[in-house]
Amino acid sequence: MSLLQQESREAAGESYTRGTSHVIIATIIAVVLVSAAVTVYVISGEKPPASTGEVVEVWAHPMHSETSGWDANGAAIPKESIDQVLLFTHVKLRNQSKQPIFLHQVLANLTLPDGIHSSYAAMPSDYERLFKAYPDLQQWHAPPISPDLTIQPGETKEGTFVCSYRMSKADWETRKGLGYTFNFQYLPALIVDWKGAITER
Image (cartoon, rainbow, N blue to C red; front, side, top):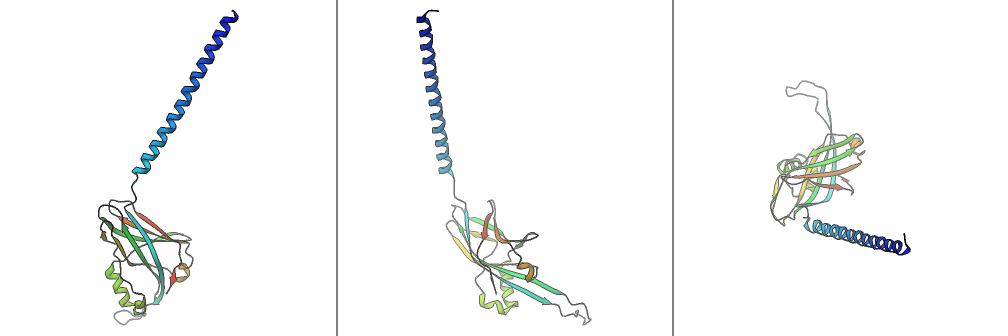
């Protein structure tokens, strides 16, 4: 092979390599540009959640009582101890969609050492009866919010609901966390965790 032929082949190889490098670089740039365009499209196309929620205040009322030890006919029966904790939550719920949203269920989820204990929010009628049954609580009465309501576009609903747990005060004090689940029809559930203090009254 002559020196001229060898140089010709080397030049061709260099030209090929140089061309391949350009193709690779162009491909990388194209991939980056497409990825960026897809990211912008996805971000711009994302919609905010239909509902938002804020827990404003939480307070609890531990209760201990005993039955009278007599039945309806006056016969003696064993007394029974009853322990429960009433959990009151003041909440704000906002509809930031363009359609009405329909709340149909609210749960308070209490985390104890043995797991999560959930309790449904009472209806406003039961909430009001509770304050009549226990007049000492009347000083903390606030307007109720129903766990079954419609929120119009741009509207905010605010109020207090109550949940009840059958447990002693000692068990209540072992809690590790508290969160809420607001279930809306045809929409993902709204989950709100409470990290603030829980006042006992």
